[in-house]
Image 1 (cartoon, one colour):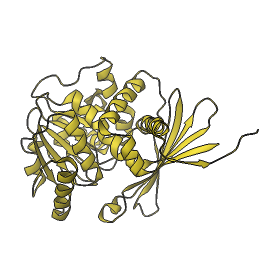
Image 2 (cartoon, rainbow, N blue to C red):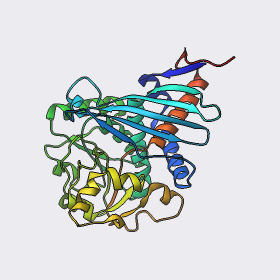
Image 3 (cartoon, rainbow, N blue to C red):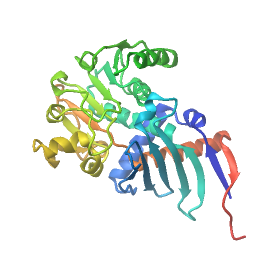
Image 4 (tube, rainbow, N blue to C red):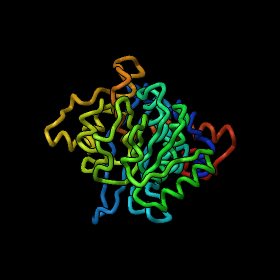
Length: 330
C-alpha cells in the first residue's frame, strides 16, 4: 500500500482560506445533523506541565482520522512552532491509511476558518473595524479569515512584545497588502472595534468586558483548557455565547468554566452551536447592539474534513510524496 505524505508548505498550497471556510461550514452542519462522530480530545501533560500531547479522533461516512499534536506554548519565543504533529487519514471501507499530513498547518488554517464562519454568521454585516490580540501564527491566519469574512477597512493589533508587533506588521503587509495599526495596550486595540480576535497564549484575561463596544463580535481562540482564559468574567456576562460544540465548551473552555465556577453564569449561557445556526435550529445575532462571542476550541471533525480535502486536492494536482506503508495479504 502507498501512503501519501503531505508537508506544511503543500498544505498551505492545497487549503486556501476561502475554500477551508466553506469546508468548515459543511463539517459543522454535518456534525449538527449527527453524521459525524467527534469524541472529546485527550490531553497527556508533560510532568513539568510545560506542554502536552493531544489526540483528536473523528469519523465521517467516507473517512476517519486522528490528529496527534504537541502543544508547547513556550515555543512561541523560539524558532519552533507551538503546535506540531500530524493528521493520519484513513478510508472507512477497509480502514486503509491514506495520508499523513502536517497538522500544525492544518490547525493554523482551519482554526481561523471556523472563526471566519462564526464571523459570517454573527458579526454585523457592516462590521469593518478589526482588532487582533496576539501576533503568532493564529493572529496571521485570523487576519486572513477576517478579510474573507467581512470588508475590513481598519486593523489594530496588540501583543505584549513590541518587536513581535513590528514583525507581524511587516509580514502581513507583505503577504496581504494590509497596513495595521500597532497599539501599546490591548484596550487601545479593541476600543470601538466591530470584530475582536483573541489569539494569545495567555492563561489569564487580557480582554476586559468594560472595553467592549455595543454590537461587537468576538472570536475567542487562544485558551483551550479548563484552567486558562483570555477574557474576563465581565466579557462573558456581556456576550451571547456560541460554541463550535457545547460538549467541548462545558469540558474544556476556561473562558466559560471559570465564570461558571464563580456562580455568575450556568450552562444555559451557551446560546447554541454554529451548526445549529446554519441548520436554522437557533438564531444567531438578534440585534445590531448585541455583543456576540464565539468560543473556539477546535474539533477533530475540522481536522478530518480539512485533511480529506487536502488529500483529494493532492491527488488531483499530483502533490505529496507516496511511500510504501503496510502490506496486503495478496
